[in-house]
Length: 318
Image 1 (cartoon, rainbow, N blue to C red):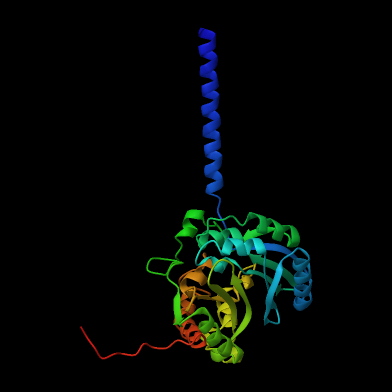
Image 2: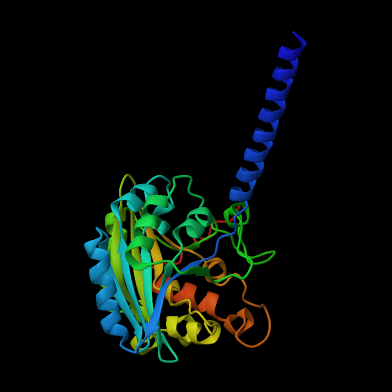
């Protein structure tokens, strides 16, 4: 009997050790830091457009849906795709559509081509989505490669991403630009269609995608100074100031305009830019301070293209 009790005690002890080990392992996994970009591969060369065409072909051959492309400059090009499984995740939350576009960038740096894309796991947590994106991320890495994650030295935890803001007083995910209000999604899209086609305020359409299960359309837009955009709001101007690291953040663009019913919004620049550049300094060269005029300029630019109208003052006061 004593032997049986001893055996049972040993089993319980082993079970407890195993449980502790499993818990520790789960905590390690849960605490794994994430970074905003994945470097697929690098290779010698300068033919950005040729490499972008090759990237698009490989992605389409792996069942990714091509949405559009953005030749940002001679040395920066972005191909935007999505996948049906990712769209299913995007449709699981009212504002989940921000996860839908996969931005794959080809950037020429010192005689070398860097091919990179936005890290779906990082942005899933930042956009507060519970549904996993593992299958799409794995398909993406097996199609293009995944040499390393980058964009933040220490990375951010799931918890940090879910409540992310750059610093005290700055916007979180749930405080976007409120660009315009129309009677319906159809009316909002009609307004945007005309303005984007005319490149109002220097803004043009790169892609659009409807989110299944939601009354939502996401439109990716280019903001070009050459098309008349205010310099402070222009994509290339902003990248030229802050995107100076060894591995470039070209896959930051194009930015998204979300139409939810008749409401038009976009992630606030102080949230979105910081989320893509979480290690960027506040002061000094190549810092956020050099972009201090950009959040306001970008808001005005996007409001113009969204058809924002000031509410009329009724003249009645309580």
